Length: 429
Image (tube, rainbow, N blue to C red):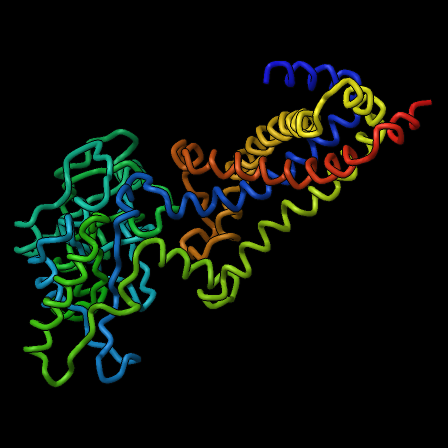
């Protein structure tokens, strides 16, 4: 391998234009592939605060057994049944804002307010999602049970209301014109964390819930999230069927199905989102995504293969001499492929850096274009290091480099080396 690298470095000094064009072509191809891979890596990887994505399941609808297009309300009564389950590590619920209401906090001047993303939830939410509290902590079960008006806020909101670095715990913040006592401050999460991102978190049993929904908190419609380890999945489904049976024994007039297509893993939910972007059904989506990625590699590979074929024509006399002295075809092929692989890796590294640069510099629209996350519209999301660096990212980059190298170098090299020794040596002038 060291010998091949030395040969490549010598070749790069001798054939600067060829090397530059090969590396540039590879870099652009890898950059486009990695741009897409990075976007969806951020959507599916276990990244704080959503560190349990790989074992997360969502349920936001209870379709009726008699008519799957109609559903029963997923209220606190149903959530209480889920809380008693043994197989999930954690169960939590949030009250989604179906009506598009804009929540706000009152600024320090008492005259103006600031629109915020308010999430109404319960204490289990902070066990499922790993927020970094810089001050205080989450609201407690006692706060929830007693309907206290308490709030967890981000550092960004803390700095806006009380000043940068000021103490916020114990102070009052006006959320939707309700005075809430701040119990904790967390690092501002990235808008890319679709399930956990918010500016303010309050119990859905608080006064604010009635203001947003116009109903008691026991009546509020909920989205339920489960955290279930992979080795408990079958037991979880079985226990969920038992909960379904208990629920239906009480609601005999409208029995619901809890184990349905509306129970989605995090991966299934992301896959559904990709289907929305590509305007394709999930079952057909693979025929959209895979050809698109292959096309991004195939087109530059065809251009690079032409360059490799041209270079192989010039090297045929050299290869013929080596074959005459006993070199085997697979040895020569391995050398050519190895040389091009080194060039491909150089281009891949540059392409990966280009992808990271593009993601950071144009993150306000790159993620919005390739994502169905409406929260990103007009926002500049926070980019953390763990979003860009991960084993899966490097594995995808390496695989893309190898596929590109095989497509670009192997076929023209193999065809050239099949030519007879005498014919190859006749090309020497």
